[in-house]
Image: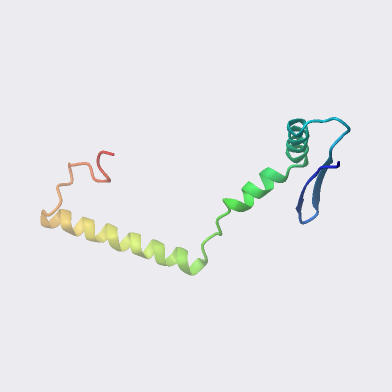
Length: 93
């Protein structure tokens, strides 16, 4: 009886075949070590949490929005709607 555990991702192939009387746990442990050694996991995690950089237009719109918000806050402080001495933000969490 032959057990083969394999993982294929693009050009990375990790394959482990069962030796004679090797139990399944040993086979799995050997496979895990081989996967860790091949560097598959860091690459997959890098792809998983990758965020695209914002385009020039999106950055510009975000900046304009924050400038507008800052002006509104300054106006409200001047009108007395907001107390400038109190801390602003999300408050207690």
